[in-house]
Length: 232
Image 1 (spheres, rainbow, N blue to C red):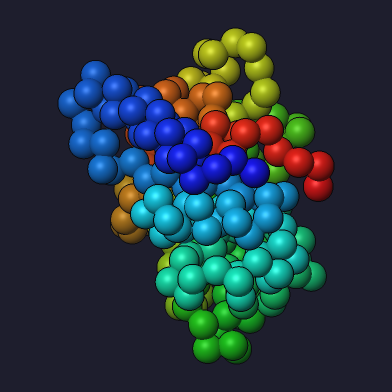
Image 2 (cartoon, helix red, strand yellow; image 1 turned 180 degrees about the vertical axis):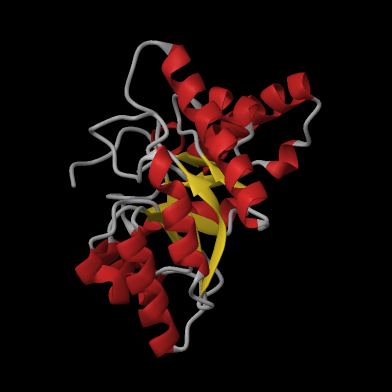
């Protein structure tokens, strides 16, 4: 685990990268949120993020959040960024404030129904496989309208925007295309359905510049903040 001083230096470095891209675009860097990814790290990672002033953390697994959340400050928000299996939907709704990885109409329907039964209101992002990568989760671009329609049908879900993960590639143009496609998808959906979809969660440690240039409002950063990840 990195020290508090090391973590601060890492966060400052990532924020500087974000600021540099925004300066080129004439964009306010405050419009890009840094989401520290604490998956497979102990709860101390979340406490470091909180101490720096960050008020949300990203986790990939429901069970990890269930174990860590009671040990963290109550006002720290927990966001699910990993694939969610339908049979864990109820636990996810109870453990997370935001679910970024809603990737099918069936999952959206289940989450919406269960959230309503539990008396919960949850923010969600729709995960779209805009890089057309068979190794990644997310609905196909062509299925995004059906997914949005399913999510909007449930008052217990507040659809805030879209999320994507770029394919692993040494070619920077792959990430550029992935992020540009997600933004175009978002713009099309917002216009077609007449809804605001302000959030674009895209970009990680290695490709955040490309994501910010394409309009990302949330970069999900793990290794650049906490160092190499321990084994799960």
